[in-house]
Image (cartoon, rainbow, N blue to C red):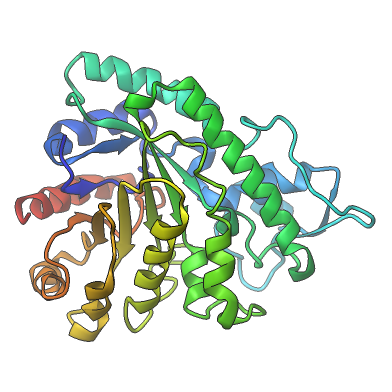
Length: 349
């Protein structure tokens, strides 16, 4: 089993078999786990929840919705200044719950289906022995963002999402052999909040509110399952959605995550920008991984890759590499080049 390269999650291919066959033979020696590509609706990450979850719930009132032509094709951002989704709880509702806990959010059934493909291809030798099947799930605060939820109801929505996502993870753990499983929690709005980028939310409370969601989220995931985190600067509307001056808040959050998770954290992915500014990477010296493998999201902008890698190594001597995010919203024609970028990164470690 390798721990040099992390595939963050989404891949714009048609099937899980396509994803496994493209990446496992080439990168398998450097991977500890491999995702199925977050296919279908999951490609849109949290942008699918308003349409498939919130708009259908009897206790949720839809205040705004996109134009009908936008509903025919999932869109990540508003078209011009038109309406997008906006929700609140119905009058008199004080607690929000989602039915069919463990399956209603779509992760479990997809994971079980893709795992069957993973196991077959591993038996055939396409996926190297020791590489685990990776399931990526968004953190609750990213799943109920203030861009779509009225601020006075945000905590109720986030609690409901936390309960639902925790149940989904528990069901995945129940149905997939734990020795083959790796679960990754993905956080983007959390990072934006830490850097003061969420209007209407007090930056002074950002660390506390984004750590509190973690305290019960993973305690039911047994130690036999690998567990990691992907932190992201955001790609909706173009990458990077957030371009902070340094990694200080990201490192602070990574340390807090590891301390609050309540069990072993196996890896921590931290994004980086296309910069060789020493001050941007300097906070990495304060990272406290406590045994977690650190992956830096440096596989991008390959014309500056070597220089950026050298600067990061001044502040953190041992780390693996990944992209800044998944690839699900890029043209499939770019995947061969992305694979070559990952092979170049692997050779540099």
